[in-house]
Length: 194
Ligand code: ZN
Image 1: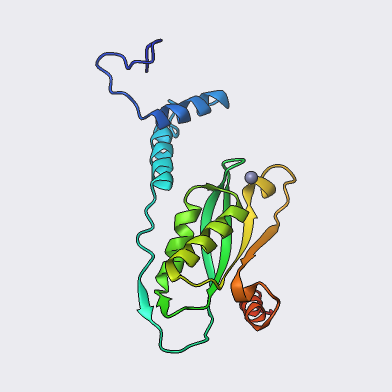
Image 2: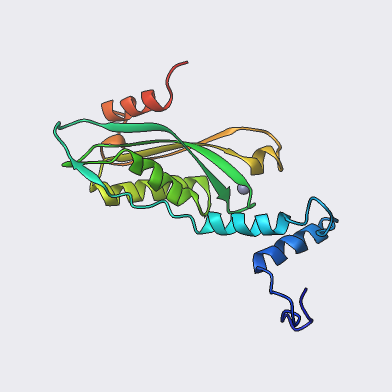
């Protein structure tokens, strides 16, 4: 409860502003935020938004010396959830990330960390893919980087055209730019024949 000046009433603890947003939303869609079942919802809403926006994926720059030369590393089936910045609705994205190590290899868990870091913000799929490619180039020092994402967007399946569909976007850099052996190996991994 707030007064008309926006200050908390005396004797009452100020609510988290995000809880106020949730209460307002519930009222606007015709709900009673104080009814059973909804009482704790604004609190959960606030905690989730803080968790999403303050997510810490941890360090992603652990590198190991490389013993073999010329290999391509492809990590596939990394699944992340993000939020479409146009509709604030979730989209899931299955990622295939590849690079050609240049002296050192990146620890395998770091690919998922990089992916989650860029997914845990308001995004569009094309930028998510680009951001991941950019960080991968920065931490590996390799110019040969590729990221393919296949996303399912609730803003397409739950609203608008209401049709589930897979949206594919990709970034190919260095040796992956041309449709040569590196690109073909990557595509074969990302889209295995079923
Ligand atoms: Zn959207």
